[in-house]
Image (cartoon, rainbow, N blue to C red; front, side, top):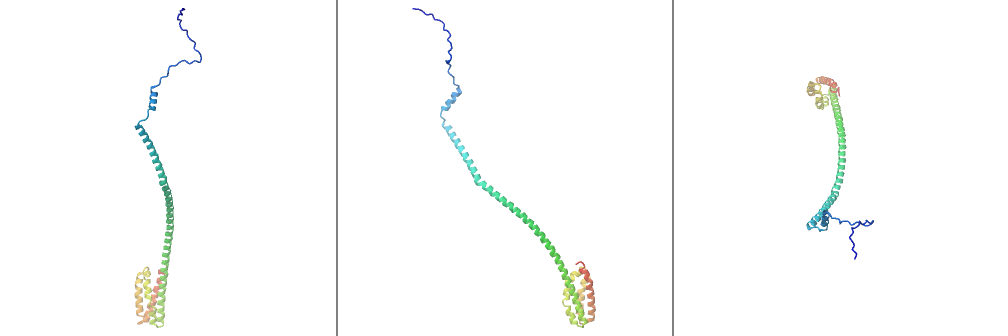
Length: 224
């Protein structure tokens, strides 16, 4: 038997294309833990909180939806109504402003009308005073004519309304001559009462009375 001596192993050449055996990969501890946790079913407490969170989200969404719906259904119409009321208020304010302006114009026209009425009233008073004054003169002259005709009763009849007219003229006469305003009514009363008794003296007194009245005319109506 031939004995083969053990020879040292020769280095074997590396054949291209053949994979070199590699050591198995070692799993990291964290990755392993996560895989374990993922495969572990969640506990009841986690399920409860998960459901509670879902319902909470649903409730919040429903609340927001209800709030927005309520806003659009309640406040948007109110906004439109408020805008309409504001427009009406603006129109009313404009109308009130126009009415104030119209009232100012009417007030001014009323004041002007009052001034015109006051002026006309003064003119009417002047005209009335003129009529009364000349009527007194006419009555006195008529009485003088009756006396020239020896008609004492006719002279007295001519002076029946003269005293009343003179009384109405007294405020105007008093404004220019106080003494004459006091004396004229007394003189006229004495003249009328003495016509039948002494017509000649009555005629002289009527002439003097007429003279005083004529002297009053420029004083009474100079600025009128």
